[in-house]
Length: 144
Image: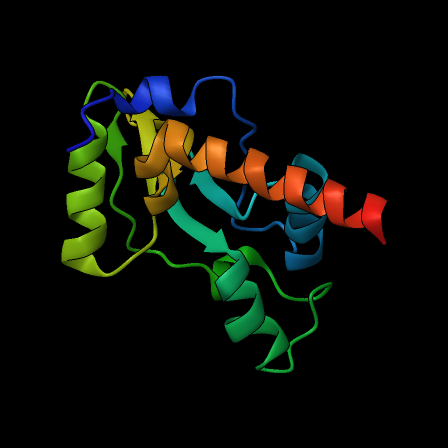
């Protein structure tokens, strides 16, 4: 079972934090620019929600809402469970399994400092797999 501390998993990773009043369009652009799949929503220095690519698809696009006119407060998941960074990754995985979500915010004294996903449990193995996929793609492109 993965026992790395959450703060070591999220260290050096980009994070997008926004206010509930931020438009979905601005949040989506920030996600694109940082290369991440979620935004943590903070109000008064407290984590109040999360907005993910899945929320964008299901709650905005499929619902026919305007990304420019819709705020994160209208479409975010408000009941968010986060964990302090000194907890092991296994605690986050347990939460994901128990509650059926895919992301767990990592907190430092209650403020968001990162986010982990189930993919983080794969750690080095996942990174190696991604490198092998890239190499295979590069070889296929050369041979084409």
